[in-house]
Image 1: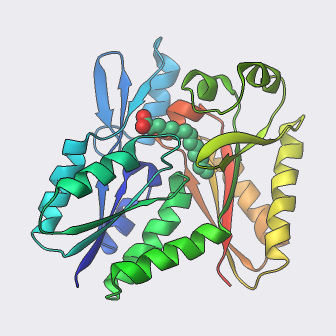
Image 2 (image 1 turned 135 degrees about the vertical axis):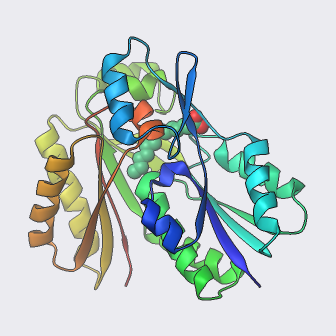
Image 3 (image 1 turned 180 degrees about the horizontal axis):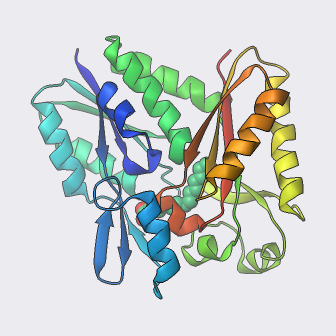
Length: 281
Ligand code: MYR
């Protein structure tokens, strides 16, 4: 059985890896006024943040349409028997639902939509593993089982400079009053039941970094090997520095650096920083 992996642009997988592992991408878009840009194709992350700084209007995002996803599946149906389609959390975007609907319509290929219940490179880690397994001739069942194993171990925390972006886009779960009180602090956020919720209220970003490290330590102390990633929104130097510090503290953790691209950056704003990891063994 020939299996191929599809994801969406919010996994922010570098282009060489997409090619090397034969990963196919359906893009989400950002819109400034009347102008729409597909991530990965029409706008770079640098260009996006620059545009936000210069624009009076804040951007909006949109998911791919069912038709966009269907076109991708139909193209792949010519060559493959099965598609594993891994997407950002269905609690923050309708992309996964578009994959489910397109999967029901396409003929000649079996589609297995997978809700990563997260986004960015954390979603990317599922995708990379799935694609490696597909290249080694594993079938959909084995791949989906491996995805569920990663999900059990996945931990992800992030914080933003300004919570109002998340509140404005309606992607922060919680009563409006709580959002108001959170604006005064630096809450650590995470996903719970596919949605973004505050994990802990922390007074300063310094303490928030420290707390994320403590949470990583809980996993690292009980593991032989951990895969982790720092994600930043236009704070590369800070991310590199943090990575060096973490590498000294956690020799059994393998760190990478990734970024919040245009679509996720629209909802988090510039300056966001996240840390996620999963125990490999
Ligand atoms: C759409 O318009 O369908 C896209 C909506 C994207 C919402 C993104 C919300 C923030 C996600 C943060 C991910 C952090 C991962 C560690």
